[in-house]
Length: 400
Image (cartoon, rainbow, N blue to C red; front, side, top):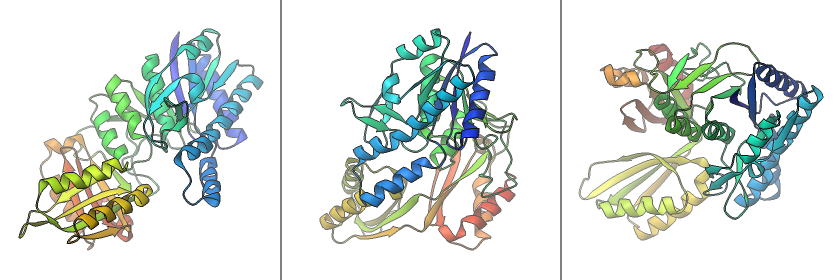
């Protein structure tokens, strides 16, 4: 008998009727002779409601207490789904992340899964139960509840599929993975297959279908992941090793709004100073993304980088300390910018991709604020007001 891990997102679990629909899908899959482990997210927009409640009480809520609060959303989902299955005659048991043995480390709100004890899962499966697991959460070495960050239920599901050595099916409110977010570009085409490398780039750059850490785990343990709709019975997208999508130079495009751009001017040209700057940012728990440094002029250089809006408090403190140490520098923090990226393994075999990308953007007459590249990616920061024009131009130009 095969084991399958399924994950259902918040939209799929958003109403009582949708929870019943998920239960029917699980039973249908089990009746095909499969053992079922199901990871679920919080219902609908309940996580957003919990966040709003927290900020109504405290405009800077402690991260430990936020984890305690946000983990309750998934606890509601697992119990409701287990009840729905029981009502339909299917034995089921629900577990929170800590109960099922998901061990984590790292900071609250962005913890990482380090180990999973599968004892309770295997016992429940042997008892012919459907195992329902709360996604997005675990427990650290201090026995504190931790959360994995938004989208962390994907990571929970893929991690479980890795330790159980079985395929993972991610069910969401879209039919699969698209080359461009259909909300930004309605004619976007669905991808039948995409490689881990391409999907990892797209996820890390802001494509919201999958959580970055989940793709990293899938690639590391070679676990096939299917992303499909929980509502429409249509084929989804397979994420697998070495499956670059056809021979197109560009597979997809990602746009990330939740990022700000920092520029530090007149920095003394000294590698030790750059090291001090980024060491201080790392010590403050700030994830730096794009980094650009100019060539020195008169022993001065400019350093630019991007970071999440979520880190603005820690970032402002770290930058103030840096500027106090180097008062000749000038810091500019720009929040009205977005990161736009194109990704494709075929980029390596198709010369002229960068030329076409920048030609398409230049025709829209807005400034490009910063650029970084890899062998399968081109990313740039652009003004927020130019987002829609940029998406339309690039998606049309590369037939995404």
